[in-house]
Image 1 (cartoon, rainbow, N blue to C red):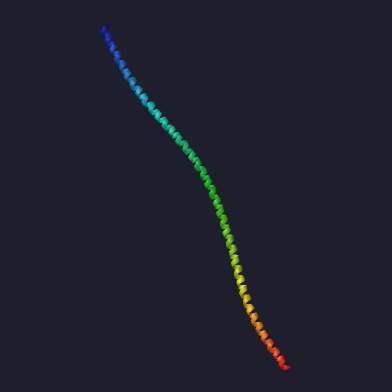
Image 2 (image 1 turned 45 degrees about the vertical axis):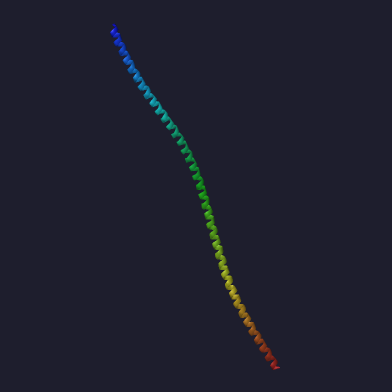
Length: 140
């Protein structure tokens, strides 16, 4: 081989090496970009997993709170029913007392009327007795 051919071949090899180096640099840059993007995606995945776990905890807490609220609601319903029953019982008792009070007042009024009539009859009886005694005295 001649020197000119070797130089030409060396230049071709250098050009090929430069092209390969440029290609290698491009591939390296692309690999760096892909790695960075992969790391970014991995970070996003990590954040998403954290958020998912937090949401699961929140859901668990909400379910627990809902169960507690349902228990409180049932307890309040029971207390409400008891209060309704108590109100009903108090109403019945009050109605019984009112009915007895009214009966008592009616009997008291009747008793006062009878007392007044009894007093009037005693006065009348006393008057008749006095008249009878006077007539007995007068007859003697």
